Image (cartoon, rainbow, N blue to C red):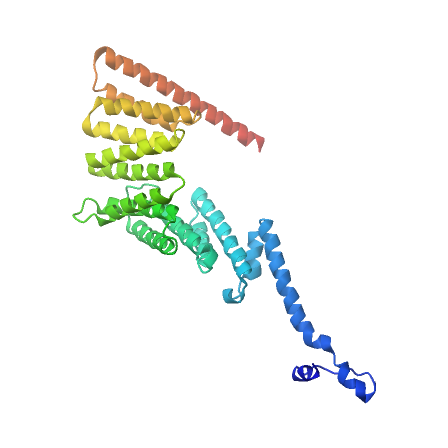
Length: 354
């Protein structure tokens, strides 16, 4: 032991003990204290990080590890750091979408970029980073999916790359398959109906893959159906319309109370009716709008579309049948106005309570 202490160049005590005892009076604490302090500091940091994480103080977790090499962190530290970055990224992403804040989109991407460097969070971070880019592509188009700008297309292609990278890590990542399909279907709007519709085929492949692995088939079927409907509406392709109906029906069967399914299904049937002029498609659209309105008693979107679609249909009719549908349109409009008034009252009460 004494030889080890000599190698460490530990200082000697100044006590005037007998020569035979001086060898044993090395200040052992001076050797081990720095190592002990470092060990304690490291343990304290881990404990602090865990405490902050459990307390929801994810910014403080990030601050603890900021500037430190990831290679020097323990596996537990990397996990805490990675999931904190994921949560911070989710928060920034939500803020970006609500406030249309481009700086918040950038911050969200930065958090997810850090999380991609940590094995425990890599696939999820790539997926969420893709979502940020996808939503930003919508934001630069002011939410108009039909409008494809160069900036939006570039962002979508970057989103596609992130989703593909996530799937390379986890090929059964159903949400990544679903959102990759959504992004590809969006890109296909700009490409279709060129002779090579490989983008569209790949989108359909990933929807099918998502359905094989998902625990939420209603969501995937609904997205698949909406993508098919969007393309059918743009191209007036009846085959795509029919395929969309299959997936709307599957989504409705999986979740009979899914508002978005019935609202979107109504839109698809209304567009099919406009394309073919078939009365049965109009009537089927009315039924889906009615069901959507039933599911969400305070919403007005279904009544809005329902009303104008009835008026469209009534123009094709005559006599008593026309009068009956105009009467139905008036009732739908009255209910829409009632719901809107109730919504305005709730908003005013909410603002008054602040």
